[in-house]
Amino acid sequence: MNIINFDSLFLTQKGNLPTCPAVYFVLSQRKKVLYIGRADNLRSRWQNHHRFTQVNRLGARIAWMEVANESELPEIERNLISTFKPLLNGTSVESISYAWVEDFVRELFTLHREGYINNTIAHDACLELMSLARKLRSS
View 1 (tube, rainbow, N blue to C red):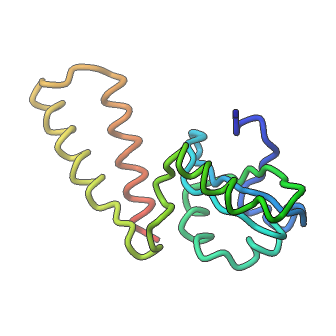
View 2 (view 1 turned 180 degrees about the vertical axis):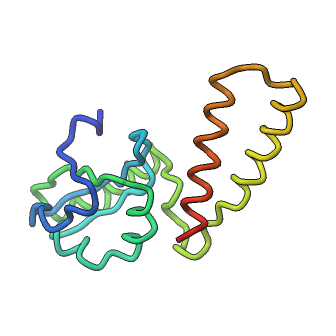
């Protein structure tokens, strides 16, 4: 199953989501599955979703797989969560802390500065991680 081929929208376009029953995938900008859920009506589900603010600040997209038989939604969702093991499933919105990311990246920068990491790609990854940590912390 290649989720990237599913229809998707930025969360800021949630008003354009279909009204069908679906299993949905919240995707990071790098197309990593952050959260999987199910909905009898996808648009209604995302009008006041408890994770909207949390994932929207990451520039996330929502992809979906329409499910014709609503009674199959729970089993499909459970199987997909088991397969993808999304970061946010099974956590409360308040429990997600990204402070460790900043600490980790600071340590990487220290190693880079001291010459233990001498790789442009690693350095660029550190910059991107620090930017993400700051963005998450500021909201």
